[in-house]
Amino acid sequence: MGEYRIIEHTADIGIYVGGESLEELFRQGALGLLAITGTWKPGTPDEQIEIEVGSHDLPGTFVDWLGEVLYLQDTRDAWIVSVEVSSARAEEVRGRVGLKKRGKEEFEGTPVKAITYHQLEVEQTEEGWEGHVFFDI
Image (cartoon, rainbow, N blue to C red; front, side, top):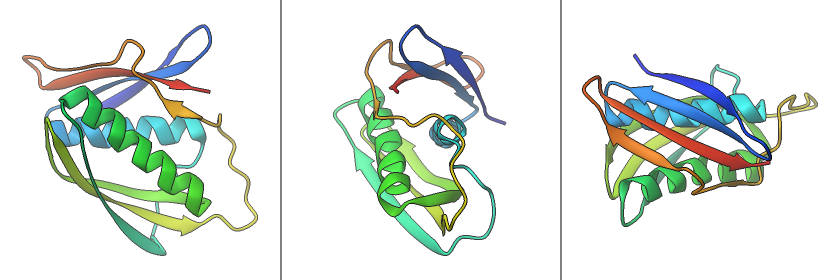
């Protein structure tokens, strides 16, 4: 089973993520990001959005995935209520997020401006996959 942990940084905030599979690593990355922004609220979605992003390498694909999750949450002004990753490889990830209208409730997290490449790592280990990523706040 995957995990994420928040990492404090001088000017930013980041997460450590781990997963038995690359798909779980990407899912945990999204959950860590949403925990920081305070926009994760598991439940039944009003809408499901398919995501397919890619880059020239695995770290870039991870950044693009997280950026797309952040973009959807921000532009739709919605809670993210589900995150699924159907396939992940170095140059491409596919998945889906469930959104629920925010209504009058306020988000109680830290707004994230961007996903950064600062100290970005994604690597396979003996236990599975792990990574570190920092966010500009």
